[in-house]
Image (tube, rainbow, N blue to C red; front, side, top):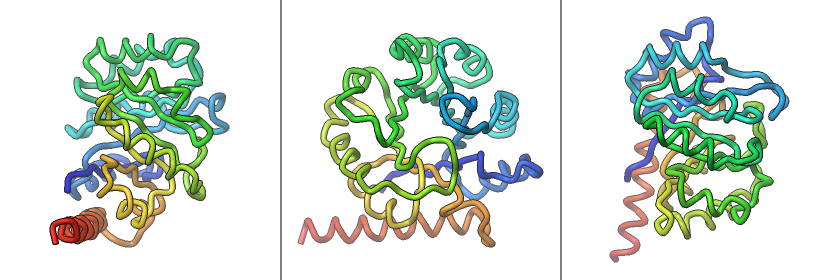
Length: 232
C-alpha cells in the first residue's frame, strides 16, 4: 500500500535542526511539512521564511508548505522564490479574497497547489477549488497549535472527499492529532499522506527510522488483511 509520511517540522528540535532534518531523511521520511503562522489567521506564530529556506537547502526531499497566514497572495512570491519545482504549497481558502488567483500563481511557478480545510469548513464551500488543486490537507484539529485533540466529525468530511477525489483529480492528506489508529483506518481507504507531529514522531525515545518503519509495517499488514477479506 502506498502512502506518505510527512514530518511536522514545527515540532522539531530547533536547537538541532540540521541533525533533525538529516535523521528524518535517513529514517525514511517522505517530505517535510512546514507550518507558517502569522499570529493573525491563527492565534500563534510558528515557522518563518528563513526556517523554510534552511530546510529547503538541507534536504532533497520535497517540502509541503502550509501557509496559515492572512491574504497569502500578498506574500506568495517570497515563498515560491525559495522553493523547488515539485514542492507543495497549501493555502486556506478563507484567508484570501480570491484564492484561485493565489493557486494559479503556485501552478505557474511549477509548484503543486493545495488547499487546507479547517474542521469548520465544509466540502461544499470549496468544491470548485477541488477542480484545480492537486492536494487537499484536511485539518482534524483547529489550526494553530500542536498537541490538540482529534475532532471526530472530521472523519465524515474525509469520507465525502474520498467519494469525489478520483473524479476531480486530487489527493487527500491528514494533518493534526495523527495517531497510529487514524493511519490504520484511513490509509487503506485512500488517504494519501499523514503529517506526523508530537503524537507519533517527535519527542519519543526512539530513532525516527524505527518509528516510521513500524508505522508502515502495521499499515501494510492491515491493508493485506482487507485485501484477503475481499478476495476470499
